[in-house]
Image (cartoon, rainbow, N blue to C red; front, top):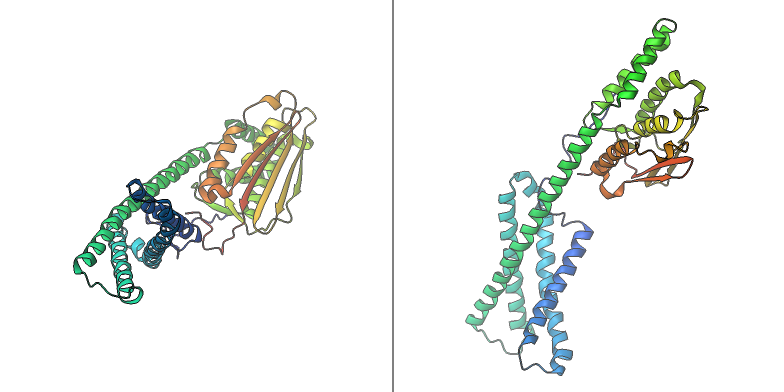
Length: 371
């Protein structure tokens, strides 16, 4: 069984605390925050005496429009430059240097846009240029001062958010790695007992069971970052079910309805097998007559939805033993896909259903790995 792991390099660099300023959402958020800042700058002078209603309703609107245009130019040009140099900043491998360069770029943009706005007002919009050097210098210094403070706060916020996100991902990875290393003792003992009972009278089946168990054991020891194609995950599930079929016989019935799921779709290793194990241990095994586990797959071109349904008796319907495997899968889905992936549990008196929903990615996608 060959498992495919995270690539060593990617064309898209994410090892820098700056957000992706090329992304539409980031640009939109920057425009909104900048506009709110323009409102604040315009509302502060109203606390002083001497402003009548006519000024508020007429001149204030014009001043707000001009101020918004000016600040938006600084924001958009700064974001454009940071978008262009983000990859180079990432290659530096030093957040302090990247932060200083970003800070200086923003100040440089502020100075350039301020100078352009002053010259435009003096020689194009004004009928009589004042040519006042003191006012010119004060205008530039004031804008640089405001930009220096706001930029420092924004970059600090980006850095803290980046560190928090990295810490959350590290915690999620550690939890997923610890949970993945856990093998159910009952499955280990049951498998060993089944193999032992077959060695003497059915050595061929015993040998096949040992090979299947070895593959499952090897898969459970893989890194939590490992991803696998759906066809490979399906093969692991079938190996596991062959082992359980030797023990449960005709009490275990499986219905697969996953023909429409792309075989090259990738997902975290061992997402389905623990759910099948839960379904057998908590659903089929306690029932004297056994039951049927139904695995249904839906694909809409963008997302994959997998349902695992198993029967429950009255006692097992109150059992809480499913949660460990579900926590494992939930953590690894989050580590790979973030909030795009979901795990939903539905339970009634005699039926238990687990649904996992995640975006369709294949091995050719550059950004198949969330980070």
